[in-house]
Length: 291
Image (cartoon, one colour):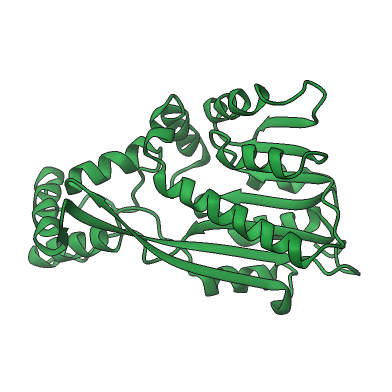
């Protein structure tokens, strides 16, 4: 997986306009997160949200919704890319009074959460960010410590069916050349995998909710699809150089295979598996100091 410095570089590059232009799926996930928070608030009227942490605020799409939904809460918006933070602050500050308690912090959540104060947030949210975590189980343990009794962790991320067409096209090309298929892109955790890590981090099965949605986008060509992914700052690969297949030949053949197998009206299809996970700390929490 990419290092935190490489991830920061990618998202800094995309923060100057290209992210918002292409982030249609991320906007859908922001709406999914907002709907889940609304439903959670309806079901848990006894929890007052006074302090919120947003992880990976990006250009402020989710942040703006939090500011509107929780007008009296203090909000800490964290992101690894300074360019993203600047865009988020510009989006949010213009509509808010100067006295509103909103902090924008540059930091890597995997390091930042380890040093943050115990039981300091009522709500921790993250939209389309957790797939980048290099040590997700450890980070979830830290986030569990940061939640007060009754506090909620809610996040959206991508599931393993994401980019199915792309991975199947690469696999077929590797097989044609008699090579072992390699993964081009991140390996995404399943909902069951996230649930297990949440339990291992101190949340209980009965306080975890999971939603899964398959969404299909259409792009003019496979190359246009990859351009869109790159424009969002999400270009990465776990594949190594393979002897016997040049990079140019690999991609030319992949494009042909993709168009042959996954053409639809208007171009080619690309599947996104959207996961929505929620985990709440019990109201009478006796375990917050164990992690």
